[in-house]
Image 1 (cartoon, rainbow, N blue to C red):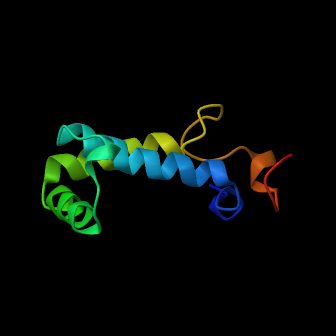
Image 2: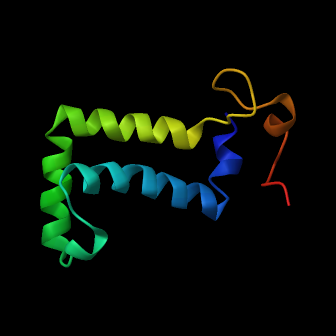
Length: 88
């Protein structure tokens, strides 16, 4: 995977954040509006990493955010691997 180039794209970071946050919030029955303090965020994250099921949900969600469904397997295409910056 050409992660070096993907990390230069803001949409990559949005999908990573959503793929981490959404399963955690869904499991605990919360919405983003329920996280109103840093302490609340810390508690939710601590509970999430303490729960193997939630960690599994986050890993599956991250996998789905990282793979390129237009190529076979989990790697990027040969063309995408040659990129130095995100394609315009």
